[in-house]
Image 1 (tube, one colour):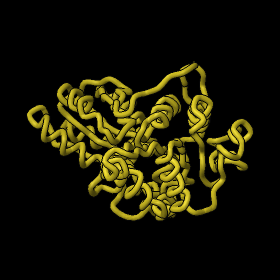
Image 2 (cartoon, one colour):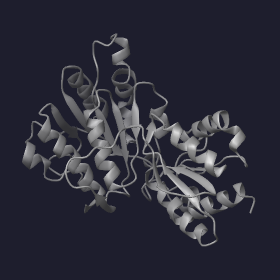
Image 3 (cartoon, rainbow, N blue to C red):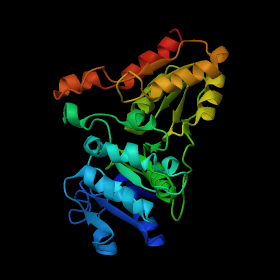
Image 4 (cartoon, rainbow, N blue to C red):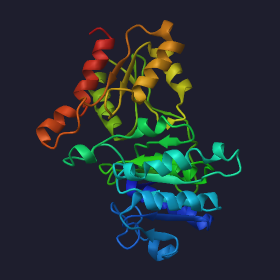
Length: 325
């Protein structure tokens, strides 16, 4: 094992795959000369050259469309959005072309693209730069949606995403790029659609993903001091959703708390709640509790932002609620 930053894990995954397959290239704003807005492509221009690490204009709709056409003609682009908030400008290409071309062409074309970049809040970036888009893209058939929470998962899942023959949305966080973690040496991949039990427990299941899962870890440590053992499941992939791992855990603990950094209406936790109550209702000893952001645009004020975001205290309260404590 080696210890590297999240951004380095992303860079390693892209570089290893580009060495393996010449049809893979990276494009996006500031990915080349500047080494990436968050330095996730550091050194790649020097190694692969300007034909495979391409700085684009500030035109997400344009370069997303170029990537779709390129993928349909045999290439495997990686598209970096400086933030998925900017991907809204190019969402027509992602939803109406990349996600649907295999079905609309009767299987004559596929579209192997990875659209990657940060999602959700990242401090004082205010309402239009702090939105979580996991459930938006997971709502669209034809897209896979991956949201890793640590460097090892990021590298293994990104390599799998790059090799996938269909479009993948790969979501990161500006606040995770500096996170350090152990990453296996040598070649390894993590299958898409497989959740990971990060902590074993018997009293309550906590399901989460992405950077907000850190709050679940903090809460679980504090609750353990009171004799409450939480089982924490990191989804890693939002679509396809690993229902089996969630259901197996709930059948053991009989209680479920879902932590998601997203608005409360119609999100990933809403879908999980439906799936669990429809397939494991008789195992539940308490109503499912889901924890989300406040149902407002993200505030700029740090005091209001702290109130807007879910935190470990919210998790502790939710766990005690389902335990009737």
